[in-house]
Image (tube, rainbow, N blue to C red):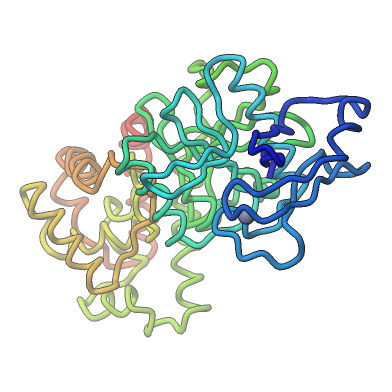
Length: 377
Ligand SMILES: [Zn+2]
């Protein structure tokens, strides 16, 4: 923690930069936790930035976990940055909701700089607590760097909790690295599998960023090739077949039970669609169920159909606590708009693998541009 009370009950804020000489007199006083009022230790050693800590095992409601250097420094950096642009309070206790964000900016932006993993339930509870009391939750990821896998970035279920959405940037994710003092902004996040994403990436030193941050809209769109997408789609099916007990995989058994072959489905089943990140399931899965049900004519019917399969556990949605819109309605609307352009022939499954390869080539030539142009706004 960066703020504690001295013996007169006055807050002492260690997020404000102090020299060793300025810190020296502070060592003589006693300090108390603003939450549980127990005595805390003043720590100003050589490694971690100056901070306060509970003694040993603490059952403190607000400050239960021991804080890493990364978290302490990140919190102090972000506080200093935000203070340059608006009123910022560090570790304030918001009594109506009994929550203590890392920082409160402009009296309404509740900032959480999250370095360690957190359960989905806790992330959702904290987020909803802020929203219900009129605060704007602003989560910044501070954990280990997002791993790269070739041209993809790996966003785990925990990372995906931080996703936000805007029309300009599509799905986006913000990270801050206290060691480098650099913010990394991932935008136009486009899933190729449930955890591998393509993205536009901007690295910006915190000192060059205003608050609230404004990122460049001129960022290039991630390279997207339809041939590559098809290859990944086929690989995905192979993986499900070989690693997840083949026909006993619920989706694949539904495909076989309906008299189809997952490799011979129409080309329109399993295309990339804007907002597809809403689903954790592959587009092949949810688009298959829509197709199997005869591509219901109204958006409402199609949404109800997908919700039914979600309820049955056949399809999985991602949990995005920070995103209210887009929702399934907009995803289905976009997919059905694309399908409008399909020829009746291309909505039938093929009979042979070689025919399917030919069809896919023709399909790519005809629709690649349209599909990719609609992926990003
Ligand atoms: Zn305490």
